[in-house]
Image (cartoon, rainbow, N blue to C red; front, side, top):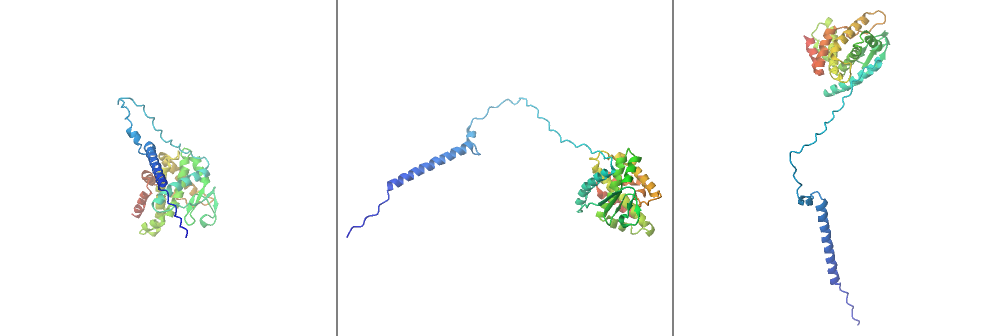
Length: 294
């Protein structure tokens, strides 16, 4: 029978040689990696082994550092001559400032609907007939602003006309803020013990003075942006508004919507405007509620 052929044995010498070569390659790669780490790694051990830099004398003079330039302060905005443009500017400012005020009390500022007109308007607040003057309708959250009235203010008191016009707009808008926070209910609660014949009058007066106080809170911040909002000119501006409102209310012809600005003297208005301006805090205006109840 033919003999079986033996299977070829692996060549152990060749395998050992390959293993040695592989081991040397691994050693070389490891050394290369260590060298690269020492040269460029985060530790930079080579730098640590370098000799320390020379120590220079401590009395060397240093160049003065350049002063840091202060951020430029924007120039105050000047009042537009056109009353329509002024109304838009003031309502934007009121939205910005009162939006922040109301957010602190978990309220949201909602823009009122605005109707601009001159001299007369038909059927405001669902009434019948033509009316003049600036006023606010709570149910529809609508501001009615008489541009002819604002122009007349500017004509009569040009030295404070811009401030007077701004005050008139802000006061009307303050009634919108009172409506947003439900202040009418507060006033009624505090006037519950007053005689029925006087209650309506006291209720309206209280709302007017709190609205003035809110205007003062707004002016506290708006004066930094608008050049014509000078607190020292406010007494004269309020006087001009009050006098014109009283005259227009008594004029024959087109009936004027009952102008709240004609109800109270300028000195009393200034007192509550001052409360708002000095504190800048609308919460201080609630003092009127306790005073009105006395």
